[in-house]
Image (tube, rainbow, N blue to C red):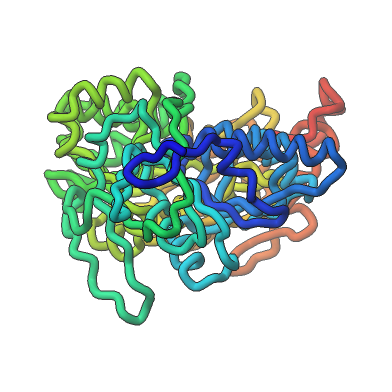
Length: 507
């Protein structure tokens, strides 16, 4: 058998041959960045083979966050997943979760390593981690994400390393890997600015646990971002005006503050707009994911540096980074997710958090994960950690969806991910509501008049005015009327008749 650095070289099929039904597996990856690729694909093929033979075969799946096409689509489509945590994104896995075929644990991402450490998920039978190299003494050089891989390498019973030859070995120059000891033996984390380093450029594994190496050269499957359109441009303009006003008032220093931005077309567009505005000074990021716009801002000198746990960029943008690693390596830091999303560091650094919402209610409670309060979309991800602990917590959303049939501002959200006590600013293309220091009725009128679409503004004001007077006004007979209308007719606004397509039941 061929060997690499003393470890057996396996085929993907050999790597999955001994995995039993019901095993718990952990895979590298935070978004598609650094995700295991060929081993989970072989696992999906094995599941289909086992099912064709009439034998049960499903596994429990842990990752850092979502993990791209192979795990959240191919593995799920093979009906190989019985349980999933801590986050997902994919049509196949989402459908199975909402059909109650897959048990899903949606959780704050910084909590994951400690949850694994204390065994709340049980034993991890096998970890599959993508790397550029592993040494004989167990130093593992990770690729485009750190995520929870250091924890999985430490606590899994057995380990397979996917050596990805496409990725540059120099990616380790960006890595700063610090694994925290269990409480109560933790000391303050010595990171005092976004690019500060406190760890090592590699993760560690006991070499005796490594059953083999699987080679591949597959790229990270990061889809290109589309334009956020007029709504995105308007939201960006509102935010620029707000930040400039905060700087004039002395609430944001002239050197600005570190930004965190969630994943998606809207945040990618907003970051590009902020970087392009001449009155916004060069800034830094302390975030969890870096997207294409961030690379452009670093190249242009508008972003002086960025810290995250994943480099979630398209293949052309990755080639640009690799070709210019002498420039980028000192300006990008990749950390484990319990460090990138650590509440104490977020608060210490004064991070401004920019995240997206599915919907918000008139008091500022945000739903970022469930339709109707029942059907999962993706999950809470890291938004809650940044929202609760940031210097400024901002949520962005278009005021309507589905050609105006759905309002993103509703009387009461049927599921709360970030509550009114943590959400400070809400912004849509209609305007920006600064909620700091406002009582409930003030918050409600501010959100309705500044953020709600004009087509829904009168309804929301009527709801507020007719609700029973109280500290927080609500009419429990009407609070979910818009959602009930949507389920029944495909439209939120009352009195508009049946939907154009009776099959439409989801915004």
